[in-house]
Image (cartoon, rainbow, N blue to C red; front, side):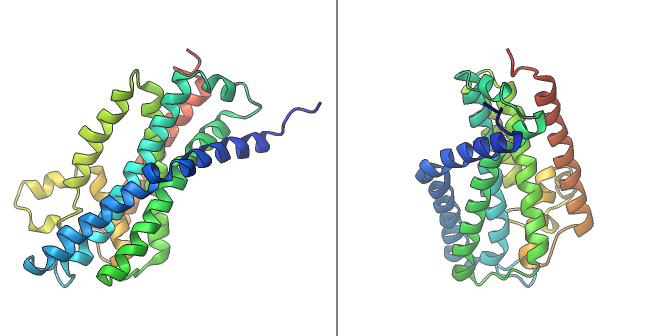
Amino acid sequence: MNAPHPWMSLLSLAGRECLRVTRLWTQTMLAPVVSSVLFIVVFGLSLGGRISGIGEIPYDVFIVPGLAAMAMAQAAYSNNSSSIFQARSDRYIHDVLSAPMRPWQMNLGLSLGGAYRALVIGIAVLAIAIPLTDAPVERPFALALAALLLVVLFGALGTVIGIYAETFDHHTFVNNIVILPLTFVGGVFYSIEVLPSPWEEISHANPIFYIVNSVRYGVLGTSDVSVGLSFGVTAAIALAVVAWSQYLFATGRRLKA
């Protein structure tokens, strides 16, 4: 019999990862969407009338892009980190490594489940939030690029952490102690222009600040910093993390152990 074609192996692996997400849709997709919508209802609609808008933008509209970005980032990271860790724990990763695929195809196939999950969540959050808040989508192409960079960055980060994690707690630690706090102080609920010095300057050292502003520019057409800087920083970090994850697959470090 002929050996399977590498592209067929890639499609099978990606299909498995996406099916894994779909079968557990109440946990993987419904729960994050409900949480984001509750943030919009509580902070935007309930308190928005008592909070002055950010510039000329109503508060309930202002928080929509950041909440969508936060949900997508957590989904892409959590999916890939848990998937890789489980594959290592169950020794299923050895079947993937022995398949007729190149390292980048293995990396991509295992990562597409997280991308699929994050994009579905992002689309669902915006589809619900836009009618609720009358938020516009000023620059759809910029929004698509920002979402792609976000998914690539956090998906690759999840892959790296999933490879290094020794226990399941390690992957949740990074999400709960690093990603989530940085997201909350990354300008999701406020503009850094309202912060006094030195907190405004410190916010510029937070990489998630640039990611949130990239998504906000796509939705609202506004950003706290230069649009080019936001996309440039996000792309540079995404490229570095992808290169790291690809190095681990190319060398097999911690994957063949």
